[in-house]
Image 1 (cartoon, rainbow, N blue to C red):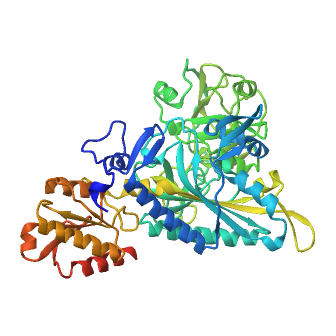
Image 2 (cartoon, rainbow, N blue to C red; image 1 turned 180 degrees about the horizontal axis):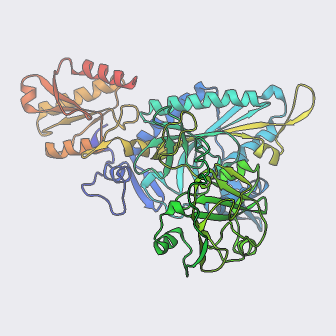
Length: 578
């Protein structure tokens, strides 16, 4: 391919609105063009990299025994109503109505395809002899991101590989789950990503066990809790905390006399701490939850956040939500922001995080408007029904596996695998006739990869001050041939000869045939990030040599014109295997 025959609109300046490296560099390098907030066109170079990621994903899915199909981007809303996901997704779900034959047909733009694939399986699979099976597709998804940003990392339209497995028993599901987990590790390794598999919550998808695959990055919007010692890793929604926290403070620690203090219009921890000149870890937040529609008081330290999923698992509940204002006022006798564990207006279970057990002389809400209670202590002033891990992990917490202190790092999610169980197959009546001639519900797994996020995530973590640094695996072209002076017939003749010979031998090569200064060409080559650059200059040509340089190395090398093709083919083939 000749540079002049394709479309590579490189930019010198940072585009307006671009904030993070991947967004800036993909726009500047001419890989993508913005159509609207959250929607991008893949330009020729960006599309080539995207196709490479697709090919790697497809090869590994096929090797893992998956079968490819292609589903619709539009789906009847009725399927999502049967699984209660219209409410679960809320405004994220893009909905529309199609006028057809005098009727209005409600549809959704699919954010995922659990409903459609399960409905398909319910219609065409009926016997244990047809199971297990794993079906996958590579398809555009749609989600109404309220604040799309960071280029391809948070968009309203994105390309995803989603696979769904169907089983007769848990043993079969577990076997496929492990195969998919291993396939994901191979995919991300082949793409050149540094990734971290972490334990995760399933969210609105539903299900039990799940893992996310994360790219550590300062600009990642997810937080990963990990242990440098044993490599335990989980997202903050899932991360366990080792031990049971500090013991209750002994009797030798003086308990001060409790008192109610006026705290006018101070609803937040920050406001209360500033007014009382206290640190957040001396405050206890009392949060009123509705757990399967019944109120429960959850106590966590002022510098911690309650974890709804841990509460749900602890109480074996189906629904865990913060209580509405009316419920809070009924249970506490006060407006939202002044709840405390002492003298609640309504007797409800009180569950405290382990860290609360060791606190003395704590600050809590007084269950009175504009008042807080100071010097509150366990047993003397209130009791709890249970101590448990009900909060998000923080840096410095104890690892649940080895006891070392854990750290927190930002990360970009690129993949997620779930053991869904029967959430969707029950809702959509996907059953099979077992060997014993009884009808049973199919057990299901779900496995997603954000393919557009693979490309953006790699750029986000592989760049320098000059531009992108592509690994050969995802580079739009592997080799860039740069004749310094295109007006020199000998230089161009050699450039075209090398281009054709490398192409003939299976190397992806672009020839920069633009009549531009050498400095402009080199800067563009580094900006785009082509792995290998071959420079043809008049001086080197006089000595029958050309210059070659890896994008990630500082030093250039010289090679005979007679041997450069063999050398390049050997080097590229070696890089492809990494």
